[in-house]
Length: 131
Image 1 (cartoon, rainbow, N blue to C red):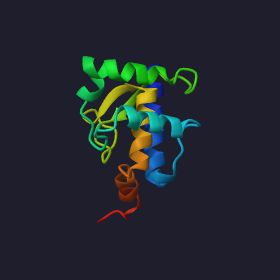
Image 2 (image 1 turned 120 degrees about the horizontal axis):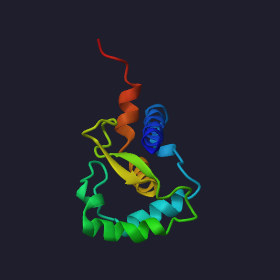
Image 3 (image 1 turned 90 degrees about the horizontal axis):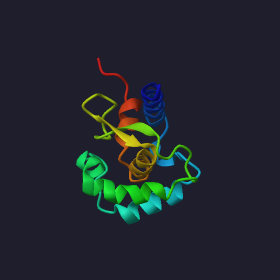
Image 4 (image 1 turned 90 degrees about the vertical axis):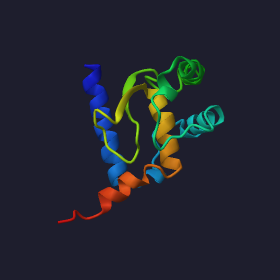
């Protein structure tokens, strides 16, 4: 059940950033707080192409845990599992997807949207199909 919900969420999100300029998207009511806290905590995290170890290693988990817990009661289902693309210029494939918490997804995708990383998806979706 959760896997189906996570996949549907990923599909809806990818369709959204393919059809609307991601720079103008607001994903939650707390986007400002999420983005500010994310960049304060993870200022040097490379978000265009993520290294899974930056989310999953024990030292990374120790840094992510307090960040995530700050959003309990702020973001609904903040710790619910969801799918996250490693390389933001590509879609959701088995090789390009990892399992993350919902707040990790929001933090990284809000940053990708604001910093222009997801524009590649939007721009490639706008291009007419080449024969």
